[in-house]
Image (cartoon, rainbow, N blue to C red; front, side, top):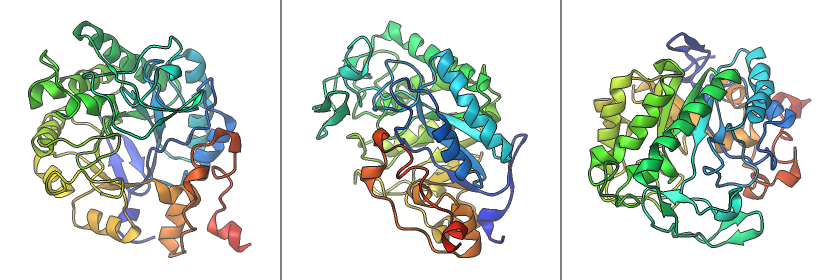
Length: 367
């Protein structure tokens, strides 16, 4: 193997054989119990030639749920179920981090065991077509703004989730603060109209993420914690006029923790809010000294260039990994990529392995 993507990298005491990362992607195969399954273990093992694996977003509490059949890490049974995944991936010699998730307003009361409304920074409804619920497509609901006194409980949910991830054998965790989910809802002025200690300025809007980071750092050493941001994203009705000030501030603050990496969705393939010029990894390099991971719409060529030019240290790939479980080998050998799988296969638990573990490696196709 040659090229910048195939050079080893160390994150603290963790060695990555290459700089290609399996990006977190919701695949909805965990069932109603939200527990990892043997099929999920097979899926991750198929993609274990990545330098590092980031799991699909995994909810930290019942309140955090916002997708059908997505996995959780808020019960002991869920933690136990994930051991089959970490053990299988570790047998391949690959480090695996769990992405921790709270959907916030991107949810529906029917997804919560107590029927409670989704929560958010402020009571601002997500302007979207619909959400998939146990009873079919439903309109989004106006969320309930979290009371100030409730926020420490949310932080504790993250800490407990990190502890369960540690017990399940994960090498580290990634805090999902992107794509219009709860932590992003607190970060951005579009969704945060609070007047308490968690809103009203770039510093106050960052406070919840700061507290979550500090909470999980009581469980994992700093180099085993990453954070994901989406400064350019429009997904889940996001995009704020002061996005550049907000996200540069966040990056500067996160720089003080010596984290494992900062995962920035700098690409525009997931949508762009068009409120100014897109933020680039080069901007984040100016304020963040640690490892940077780029994401969203990268090709092998653009990924190689980003690493070669020093803008990124790693690149995570999402959609290409769905139908190309051997993405690293395809990149290394110049083999063509399989066609992208249709979105109708991505989230349907009833399909089981179809569109999930049914994709063949290039060498298997040739034989």
